[in-house]
Length: 374
Image (cartoon, rainbow, N blue to C red; front, top):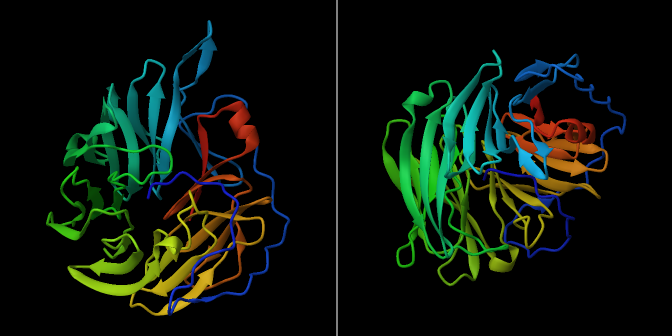
């Protein structure tokens, strides 16, 4: 679930799941000392800069937003994501048009993935050579026509369309809506195809060979993820909405993990051989923990954030929390002690990279992101 960090106060209530993991003891906090981030250059910041401490910094030099005569000119960097080799971002220009670009983290080369257009653009996911985007045409009345596009960021001329979807009756606020929420591991792509008013929604998998399969059909809210091996953990409500089912799909086979009362529902996180089922969705009910299981269904434990910290996402192996002192990472595969991440409370987590900013960065140049590769 491409993922802006949701900063909320964690609550300590949830409904137990029969056979659920045993809660882990609160982990010791890492040492409070951490190096201050290197200051950004006062001028001459290009598309890619490597700071003295090894941190990568990306920016869009021609996307400087300024105010002239009471109006905003230039553009702003909206959605952003990073992987080992790439940074991808969506720009919204002051004339209302959108554009998508990538930056090669080895060479600094910037490429245009989607030229300026008057459709909305949302970045769904980035992994390996693939970037997945959703183009949207707002038809009014809660109705949207959406086009799901797969674009190789090194060769955008090879872009193709994965799906055309008509979304109807979309709700506002905290309402769950059947957006595609596409995920990729660089080979496979999984997404939700909305069924409209009368048909069921389908979670679809397009594998590297080009074969398309249906993972699950439902007319209820559903969450899913995708790991490098093609495993798809899924959490979906029952037909009557009373319970939530958790299972793993791989190559046409389904392994049931468990069920919960709807009041204790959550979404899923994939850590490869370990999968997570959150206690809370982070919106109406903040996450106060993550139940961890092996992909074979063996319960491990429940990871809970430290006092004063909030779960904001995950990497390929870590639960990522934001704390008063900055970002903390907990390796769920080895159950190692918590370690310090970037000294920032503005963090976006991806399988193999963290995007972050400091308060000084935001004040000086909001079109800049720092990248920590994992």
